[in-house]
Image 1 (cartoon, chains in turn green, purple):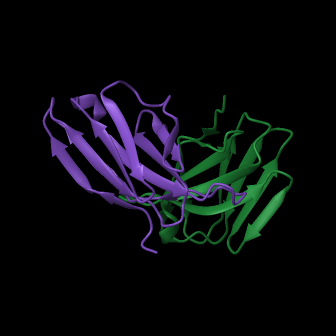
Image 2: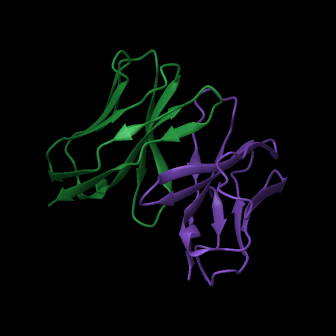
Length: 110
Length: 115
């Protein structure tokens, strides 16, 4: 089955870059996702990457995918206070369900 | 579109009472998912529907939990009887399966507290 692992907490100063990491187990995953959850809200899709890609850039977000190591990362450039949230990575399994990690809390210090 | 709409936003009830959570998916989406979020377990998929048909309910914790989707625009998750360990945030999400990238759109959740 799918198992998505994430570290729990990251603090970063405003303006610095932040990197969140994730490992997954299902090598047949076709899409991998990053979701953001702000306090009291549902998860919001940030970006996704197709499994045949190594990198995807979307404004301040850069997603890196290492299929060999089953490692996914999200880099946020010029981190802002509005980036404080919990970030979830997710993999799409063979039956089209998404398996989510436990999330990584990012706290941006002004 | 207003997005996925869940109600109520907050529910406080006593142990043993019946709880019904409601969800309206995004119009045109053909798949609907119920998740439960707790600090200990993170996000757990409880059940998902495709074209109003339950596809996988293996995540439903016990027979006390049931879900229905009578039509494409409405779903309910019912807990009867409720227990304190059911306290969590329950999210509904919808998706347009078949688009390829299967993006999930989440509602704002229902915060359930069972006393």
